Length: 296
Ligand code: BG6
Image (cartoon, rainbow, N blue to C red; front, side):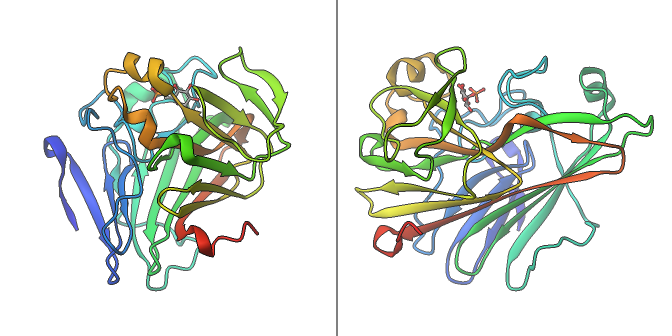
């Protein structure tokens, strides 16, 4: 269904017969809700989120494109997250099977104004899909449509905010022994020493060359989020903790306890596309009872 969300912004709601659902705002091509079959929300959105341009919605899955963070001259995290996307009524065939899967196709193309700040013509197609089992799948296909023969490069992240019960009880598995850049220490490079990531203070790291599967284990809820990704070698892990939380106007002072960002990304090695070339970046999220999760 296509309907109106907060502040009259257009949104699309996907529903599966077993009860799971997903909401996507055209503003930002932004997933703001993913509920399991019991109606439990799995993504974090701040109570103070501002659903109004030019601010990106705080929570859900902001799309960082064509720049992650401040790795370049564009605004923080690029402009895709605060542009109005449209529904792609005539998408080219996607290579993914879509049987029994609810989905919506969105598209973003640069405006004249966008071309002034990033002089590259592109077509960004985003498919948001919900499987019968309640898995959420995002597929991004970005094509260089430059007519001037020029290549372009970009960095990218699915800036996913997971809803968790207590940050002190959460572990992130799958990033052990990897190198990371620490955003809190001038992006100096370190090697992860722990057997899982746990949270005791602000954490803001870019893990490099990560496996295609990462797990977020919420002990209190006995729930494990499994993140699977394709075309996205890096993973950002972020929790602002109390001080940074207080400094963010669109984030509650205590909300850091209930969220963690694990972001499938490509940052260290930007993607370069020649005219006519296309890149695909995939994210697949599932939420399973921790007892089902074997870590394999
Ligand atoms: C994370 C970055 O991805 O996004 C953090 O690693 C940043 O450094 C955070 O603070 C939030 O960014 P923003 O622009 O949405 O406030």
